[in-house]
Image 1: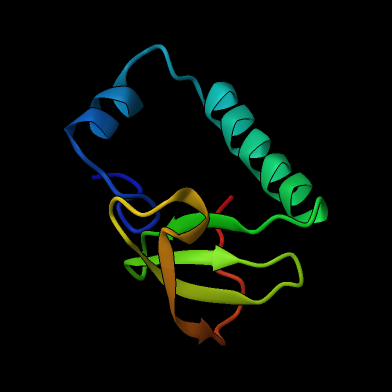
Image 2 (image 1 turned 180 degrees about the vertical axis):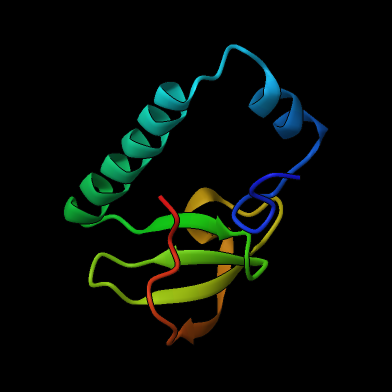
Length: 96
């Protein structure tokens, strides 16, 4: 499927990508909005969590630029619903 290396694709994604409703300009606007929200959140001093689909990792990015592989703890309270597995040393992998 198109873009399979960059996104997690499912039938839903495929249907949305091939539908006439999501034009390239709309998709670009969504990606840009996500990038802005990520930067604003980090600037406000709050960590950002996202999925690195290429490597199959859940990532926490700290405002200081450090990134960590995390795993989520089902049913735990929001402020303690993850655990850090390891610090990531690779270059920036956020696709926002």
